[in-house]
Image 1: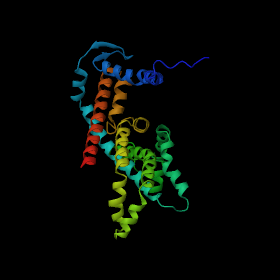
Image 2 (image 1 turned 90 degrees about the horizontal axis):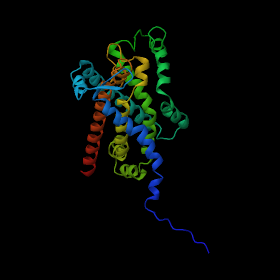
Image 3 (image 1 turned 60 degrees about the vertical axis):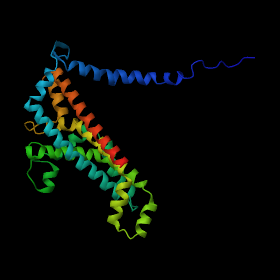
Image 4 (image 1 turned 135 degrees about the vertical axis):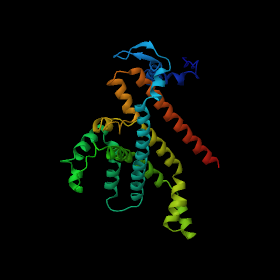
Length: 290
């Protein structure tokens, strides 16, 4: 009689299934990241090949560069505006769809639609809509504003477009959070004499606090990484009024062929996002414990 041979390595076997995924992560995520760190210490040729060891000078050049300092300030403004627009639209639309009414499925689809639209494609649409002479926006509002060329409006315009693009995913997260709020809490609040505003402040907001924090984090990371719509609509202009860090990295690498400097800038951006994320999680954990 034949007996099935027992596995001699029952502990190792499950980890073997992770090897293909690990190899893909290593080749396409960790290895490029390590190469970026390595390249940031060099002066490169036009193909990105390291030629001269430059040490920390790329980082020093960045921090003393007026252009880089401007890109940081522009990025901060851009991220704040995107957060305000994207989270506000996502939350308000989720609140509107939290109550059953005729056409709910249609409006839910419309509000979630931005998450299915490619940023580069919608950027081309907005480039036509925002044209000073023939654009639909100026025609509807009877204005003569050059939305993408005027430094007063260019960054705000990009932030509104980016926030709207992010609002679709925010709508889905907030909708799921609102649907999971315990209805008995509202009933208890009604018994205690709470009005609609008090229910919102003391029942709804605390109940969706965790998902709100998650939405806040992913929106910050996404805003820092925004590129396609900026490149297509303004290319960092006018002047450098919309030259966020990601676009500045692109410009240094693929227009100025300063790959070492661009690599150093990428590492700085990574550190900024990592530090902000760590601070937010620390604040969240402290708030959860108190």
